[in-house]
Length: 554
Image (cartoon, rainbow, N blue to C red; front, side, top):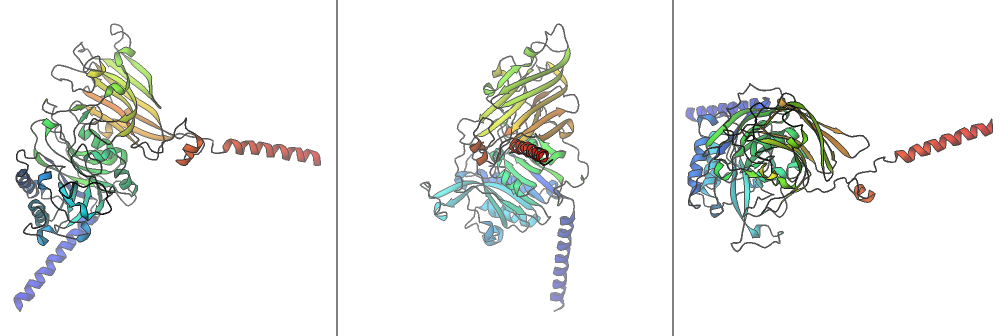
């Protein structure tokens, strides 16, 4: 009897201790997150999950991960289509570690990761290839594979007890042999440290669904597994992550697949307008490593909490030739070489250049305080000014964005085909330096529009918010927004990109200056004078009538 009583008391004390710990975590102004840069195993697709799982478990149980509340693993680094697993729906409240300990329903890796979350008392976010019977969704009348299964690119979230509390299936597939859901999903989950996370996967970040829907719901923290294929000059991995987090003023926890020879790397934690807390671009053979940081919470009014302990940014690797980087189709831009706009090099070594470049409905206004560098010669890389208004498309990719961009980008030679390439920094230096750069442009409004500052240095990291000023201003009597990006100090000599990126997503309900009144009204755009001209004329007429009546009665 005494032993049972003692055991009961100990259990109560344990529960009280855990409750006190959770209460303290909920009240703190930060949480501790770990994002994983992970090099997946290569080889037999039926067996690679075993090595990948071993790597996941090693990281979860590592000393570096011990302080974390939540860990995020990258996209497509656990299993393959050949080893796709069933995933329980969150409303079923299933804990695979307890409910399927023998892995009779769910794959062994799903069960063991559920157990790892339970053992370490952490939230764990993984990405996997999921299978679901087509018959489970009778409302989906699209053709089913001969196997009878749909295969999804899926995020799975375990809570501290190992239960599956959230599942998100990727909407925007990047040339993947996967299925999309019958209806796009918008998914968020709550935590015991009083933070709600939205989640999406890799290419989804370029689209309105689900990102803008989550933002409109007030979500301020996001988990983001990715296997990103970097592209110059505007869409390398960490460059895009910081740009998105800054523009939306949110916390973004990004975990990147680490396979530089395929073009995949890029991991980081970003705190809205404050910028990078930690980030990593791997340019060698790839790595398996967790990056941990304290992440400030946003308050009830969506204001950022006071900063947590100062964190030292990791040393940046120099970009090597091992990282494969794609190139944007810059031939579609309206562009001009910087040298074509400047006086001959023999006469002037510095100056101020102001130039406007228009393409479609976007006019980009550039202001450059430039200097020719003393070491400049014909082997050095230079710059072009560019403007683009149109669809951003890639071969073999079904989804596309409508974008309007204004950019200064590096070129390794005089032709446009030599732009968007990595300069050989051992052989080339920048032909110009800039004491200041400013880009201004007016963007017509749309039902869905995301304007972002976009920068990149030759080490493949972007400028931080302290290095630039960014402003958006609604123009009076105009369905347009004035965007302005300017440096706060001289540009580093290894600058590759300085740009405003305007994402119109599907370009639905965008104001068209040359469109009909009916078309614009259908999208909520009233005539620019909004009846003011007619009211003013009516006011003048009434004033005249009043004056005339007073004259007659007098």
